[in-house]
Length: 395
Ligand code: ADP
Image 1 (cartoon, rainbow, N blue to C red):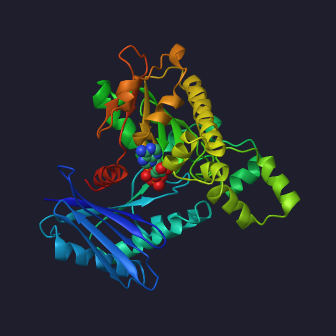
Image 2: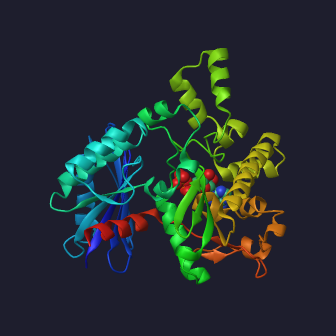
Image 3: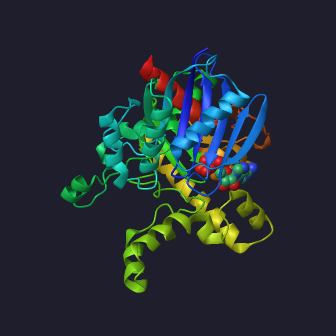
């Protein structure tokens, strides 16, 4: 039975999944980490068990050798489930890549060239692709971009009002991220509300460590909260989201903070963490429940920003049919879901407290039967979406 290997590569680790091309069943998944450190670590999971191993993994190529070894030792057999292609998650596709793309030497050069826009991610993605090409030299490799889904956004929504020549020269505009997740969850609602996605206006809240909100009109992204980088928009675990850019100028004048420290401040030491000293939403909620004032304020700022965007995107869309919650916080936190949509009854948004509190996997409705807008929890599955898009390229 044919399969697809999905790879998500970072600078010192990569995750993989082997997915059956027909049934979409997950045949295996794994994580190879601490690449380049003195001792690396590899885990491999199949429906039959979980394996771990510590070994020297000097580079990504050695990582793929460890992965192939795990398949050999613990299965499933790659001869019985031959991969027909390898699908790679690539973070930044700039304005060049608007669909899944077969990797050629020129495509690799273009992904590398976009590294200025995603210095932590694109070089690592390229490293992963090159190593995977060595491990599977006869297979087609397909790049699936996190930004691609948002390439339908129109210039009025993606343009920053700054010097136009400068912006053009440096490719400064809003690109948006979480596109693969958005594509998956907005497509998955179709069966559930029994209307084609082309007829649905949706707002998707992807609330994980990174968080974004997207307005989707008939399956096409029309606006999204992340921008040139994943720093813009909602309050996140450690990222500030929206901020008056003059704050950065003020900080630089007042404290002479370096560019790297500013980057670190906004990406690693802000958001829930900056406000409350905690980046994990579970910790913030439990501290707030115990009366911690900073955690309470962090939650309120987080929720205020969400509501601000739901309002903006409702007006941009003109009509909202579906609101989707997804990712770690969106799938698991009934409190955040309820509070995000509290008080919006006059706009046709009514969450049913009992449905919202029920735990469980799979897609579920949490709005009342009377609610004009259907509110859904949809577990995201970026790997499956990458596998599907990879197959759409290789046929
Ligand atoms: P990433 O963006 O790293 O992929 P995830 O989508 O896995 O992140 O989301 C991680 C976030 O989900 C963490 O902040 C975690 O606290 C939060 N989360 C997971 N389970 C719960 C829960 N039951 N209640 C609230 N937050 C949760």
